[in-house]
Length: 290
Image (cartoon, rainbow, N blue to C red; front, side, top):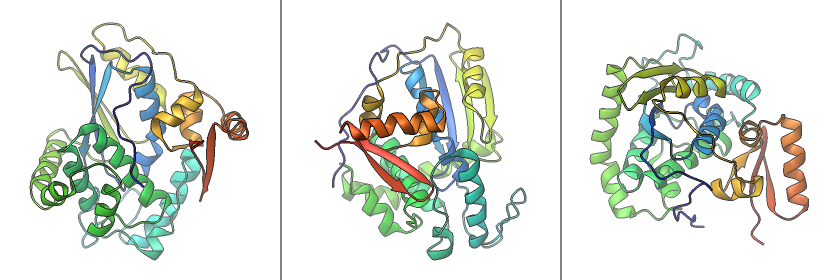
């Protein structure tokens, strides 16, 4: 199945130059970044055209040899599984931790490099590909440190795969290491880290898993002119725009409790407007094919 990647714009999106840029230091395998997907969607929905998100790859894990996460006391692959369980419980995002027992990623660098190969062709496609990488490792137990998996996922998009593979083995590595260097220069110590930058170059850095209000406060503090909240899409339109969304993402964007979001989504399923997909730890919703 190939994905429809024709450019889509949020209804009411503004066309002028974005007022703010968010440098998002992230990693496809980072569970707290996955947990932050709802706030990214809300930021993009409410401030469409006014805030631009620029993805920077962080390189969470080069290799397991000599790796130690002192905060979470992790130095072996299987120790990541209980950490992911905790992230799922705190964030409400579906996560299947069994990948760390069955086929654990040996490094997060390949996924980061693959993102840069995608970005070299189209930034919007690259963002969709990054989401697909996250879903694959977080909910489908696919090992995205494997080149074959990365290429298989990329083939679902309209990338020039000959160029993608060539860039992955050369130019994309250079671009990824440039991101790593920028992260070091800016003092990035963990993920997610988002650095909000305004037109005058003033910055606010926010690290770690945070509520949406923290990001909105930073945006409003740095905006050199007033930000305008855009009208939200209807829920079916939101699902259609993104193609595959978790209950938690809907709840955050529409400021609903989990129970309220679930009830509204189930009603849309009953009406034939969307389709429910159950996963370990939760549900996803996608457009109806009818």
